[in-house]
Length: 107
Length: 176
Image (tube, rainbow over all chains, first blue to last red):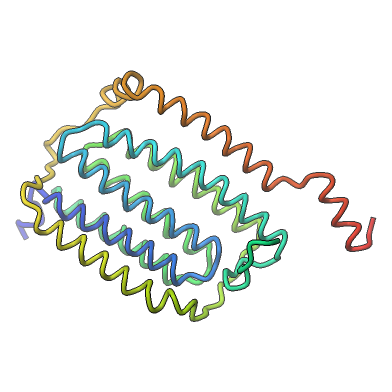
């Protein structure tokens, strides 16, 4: 029981968690059949990568690693805005969100 | 205490991520993604990144997920139909995911010199972060603001209904 109140956690556990989150994002990207959920899986992958950036920033006591995460967040916000706009445009043209039926680049 | 916090919130993280994959309704997936993001914010705090923890809650769990929820409600997204997916995903995708995860895990577990995280490590203050951001990295920061401006314009141009489009649509359906 005492081990649960341990004061330290190896950083490799954080890195493993980030790798697992990234892989779950990839699996979601492959198995989900809804355009919006596929997009959410990409956000999950970005979050997994961010966690490993923060872990390495902690390891090397480097502030720039955290600033990189900040930039990733800003780019992710811009990406979400544009991506969801594209999803709305696709839905307007096709009236469906199933990725199996959105298989042409032409509208 | 740190280990306890880590186990609880890493568990929330993994549970949310797996739930995202299992749910068939997009709104349930969105809610489990919020769980993942908030638990990640706590993990950032454990690693001493206070500013990022707050930014994670505000930007990711707040702004981005609200956008997702709005779009799900706007498009009235229903349950997804399960199909087998493409054969390429089955034959190439899943084996590569397993291989990548195995490689990364092996590398991480064999890396020497990775430290430990303690609660007493001290946090990177926002002041420290902003000093670097606004002196060394001022140019990238300003460029990002241009990027966001372009993204806003792109989103409006993409999603906005322009008059011509509306006219064409009403002509096609035969109603005025």
